[in-house]
Image (tube, rainbow, N blue to C red; front, top):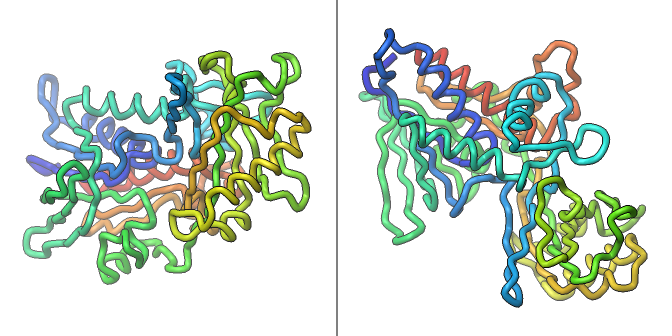
Length: 372
C-alpha cells in the first residue's frame, strides 16, 4: 500500500458512503502491525447540504411546526440474504433501521437517511476520512506521469474551486460518467471502465407530493402503511410517514408521501422543474384522494411538491456490481448495477438502497485489491 494513499469518493449516498466505509475497514486490516496507523486518507464530496442521496429527508416548516418526509425513497427492500444478514442486520442491531410492515420492506429509523448519517459520522470519527458537503465535482483528469487523478470541485458556499490530487477515485453516480452536463470524466477515460457503462443508461423521473393533515385521515387501527394507484392512475405509491417505526408525530398530524408514475413525471417535468406546478399538484392530489376515499384528503394542511428528474434507473447493468479501471484506480458504483454473483440469491429484483449498498461494498473490495 502507498505510503500516503489519498482516495476521493464523489457522492454521499448509500453507495458512496458504503464504499468509503468498506475501504476504511479493509485498508486498516492491512496496517503493518500493532500500534501502526494505516497511512491513507479518504475525502467524500457531496453536492448536497447533507448526506443520504436517495434516502435523503426533506423538511417543511409551516405555522411554526416542522414536518419531516422521506421524499426520495419512502422505504427500501431486502431481497437477498447477503444484504439481510450483512449491512441491514448491522443497521437494525444499531437502531438505524426497522421492518416496515410484513414482507421485505424496511425503513431507516428515525429517518431513512439515518444509516447514511451514521456511516458519515463513523467515517469522520475514524480519523481516516473527512466529509466535504456542498461540493460540486466538475472534472477529473488523470495524470499519466504521476499516476494520479486531479479532481476539481466547486464549493457551494462561495463558488470557489478546490483541487484534490488523488491516488484513487470512486464515483457513485452514473451522471458523473455518462455524457451530460454533470459528467466529470472525459469519454476516453470513461471508455476504460469494465464493464462499460452504456450511454443509453437512463433514469425515470418522479413527482412527489408532501402532505400533512391536521386531523388524521385514518385512526391508528385502520391506517394503511402503503397505498398503490389504481390501473390508469397517475399515482404510483403513497406511503404514510406517520405509520413508520421511530417517527415522532408532528403536532398530531398525519403525514403522507405521494409518488407519481413515470409517465406523469414525463408529462409534467422539464429537467428538474415542473411545467405547471399548480396543475401537477392538483392532479396528483386528486389521484391520492380517490385512492384514499376520504373527503378530507383533498384539503391537506401542508401541500408541497418535489420534482425529481432522476428518480430511479430505467435499465440496470446486469451481472456486475461495479465498473473498474484497475490500472488507474478508478471505479464507479451505484443503484444501476444488477449486482450478480451471490449464490442462491435472486438478483433480478434487487434495486434502490440494497443495490446501492452492495455495489458500493463491491467497488471498495475491488479497489482494495488494486491497492494491496
